[in-house]
Image (cartoon, rainbow, N blue to C red; front, side):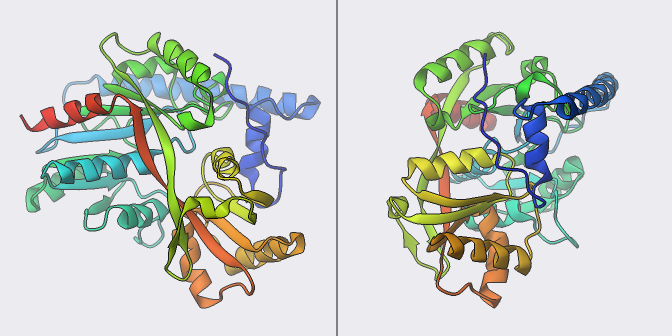
Length: 366
């Protein structure tokens, strides 16, 4: 299946990720780009060998351990954003709705000095009161928590490649915009594992379906069916903007952006998805700046971004919820003059197969 090939943002000193994407996607042409792709393909071959060794080790007796209680993993096959945070929030709220006590567990990538990273801060905002433990050793984190605290289910954020911990439900998210990672393993492409790894999945969910047409979703579903087990359901989800969080603490409907001149910035795995979301909301994007995923923003970053916005006549700075939690401490100290700040809040909405997911989750406690 052909992938939707996003137009990467212009390369800039702030975003080496965009320059890499331009190379691996084939957007950047010429002898230098071709040489870079050749080098990256060699590195990807070494990565494939390492994966094969790891997979062999996972088959050794006693290598995979079971937690004291049920475990749900939410993961993906590609680097970059596929909607794991909204999906984890969806599952946590679903468990609460079913009268259960969920725990969220993540690696804590990008956290500093033991402080929560942006995903943890965003999940705290989306799921207030749900405990969240960040620990690279997910098995240790789940075991210790379930031993000492009441807990009915652990939800692993980005857990598909964490093979050491057994899981009762393995959910894999596939981004409709670039589902197959440009056909190559990292660093030549975006794939963290070969597509054959989908045979481990219990559920596959196509995300961001709202950003492509129905025919593209149907083709993607058909392509995925050749990789998953025959009994693995393929669900479809959309990222639905639910409103805007404003710096003054108020909320506005997402439609408030329609026709508004905005400067947008993000540091996420798939910035093109954010750009398209703003376009669907009718925003007039005057500036679109990207930073590498998990970028630690500075006052200088935001000051320069605000200056770029004013130079174009934009009146609003807009970002993602994941970025907003990192902006807040800086903005509260020194809010930019004459500019409004808005964060687009999104929620996962299953448009095909919600009953299947609910059934698979509820069976964990039978």
